[in-house]
Image 1 (cartoon, rainbow, N blue to C red):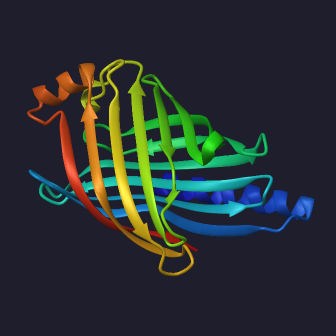
Image 2: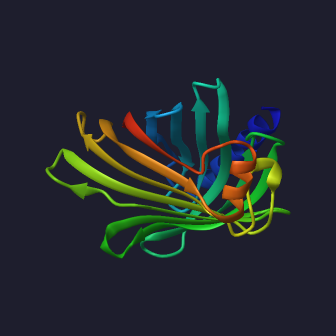
Amino acid sequence: MKIIAATMGALASILFSLSAAHSEPFVYGFRADLLEYRIGEDADVAAWETFLSAGTDDLKGVWRSDGEYDTTESAFEELENQFRLQTPITEFFDAVAGVRFDTPKGPNRTYGVIGVHGLAPQWFEVDLDFFISGDPIFRLEAEYEGLITNRIILSPRLEVDLPLTNDEEIGAGAWGPKMEVGLRLSYDLIDRAFAPYIGVHYERVFGRSANFAEAEGEDKDGVFFVVGARLLF
């Protein structure tokens, strides 16, 4: 926690100084793309994906937090925090760079982060990140918001993590991806600031990652019914 607090303080100081030097408006905001409870056959999981951002249009700092808490086992399956700087490189894409701290099952992990985030053709939101360490990982995330009405939105979502080396202590096998696929139906109650949703979530590991899961007595895949809400303010 001391490392996280120090990182946030340094990042805020840099952004505030840059904003003052260039006389640009300093803005901040919070959003939760996922804030949900997943109900599965063998386990229930509380999950979230949140973003706290501050800075200017040209440069902002972002704290991203991702987590999955197994309520059956009363233990975190995943707990990830990223602290990133983000700047536009085209009209639709930003470049990001920063650091990622993980406290998963097994030993903690620290990675450098570089990536690009933005809107691909047909308005797909795409994130592509490379996590740099002794055991590097590629991550692809893609999401699309399909408007059924002005308030009812159907959102397919894909996330793929591809480890490039074996990290058996956290169940990551070289070139054995972990895939998560979801479909969520939301209703905007307060001008996109609060949108409850229901949906389905499927996840699976492949290759050596699946072998590591089986060796630990874990399932290679799982299907969950989802209830949750998106937040924006």
